[in-house]
Image (cartoon, rainbow, N blue to C red; front, side, top):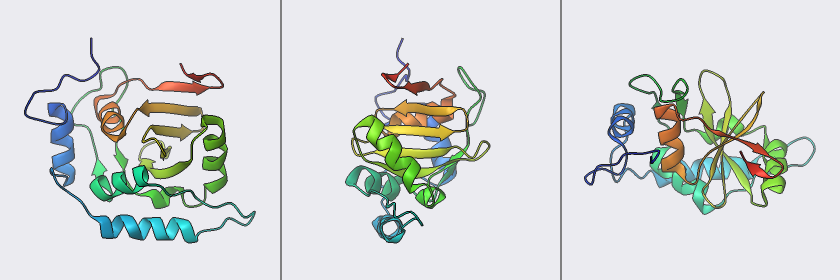
Length: 168
């Protein structure tokens, strides 16, 4: 069984589309000015130890389309409780080293995407567009691109834990 049951008329499953629209998203939403502002703020930040953020097209595109949205689920989750989240990369501003360490382990640069509201877990995206959640229990794989990650969070799909050998 597929994780997402899509209708031909929508990009997202019905419940995900509804949650996104409730948050203010609509097809064609594109705020590149806000995305560039976040990119500039991340590039300008240097940690006390000299760590810097990576910024790349996959992150900027996700921020341009979904940045500034706070998204909550309309109902119960499929496997776990749905996770309300917001797309604002500045929640990861002071985590440049953490994201660089994850990037080295993944073999791809990683950039902040936002946060899960209830748990304060950091959402991150890599240069290939894959999305992760980092919390006190570990690092989690949410999907191969932003659409899958949003669906996983809204629908309460069980994420895969990242291990040294990849997602499990």
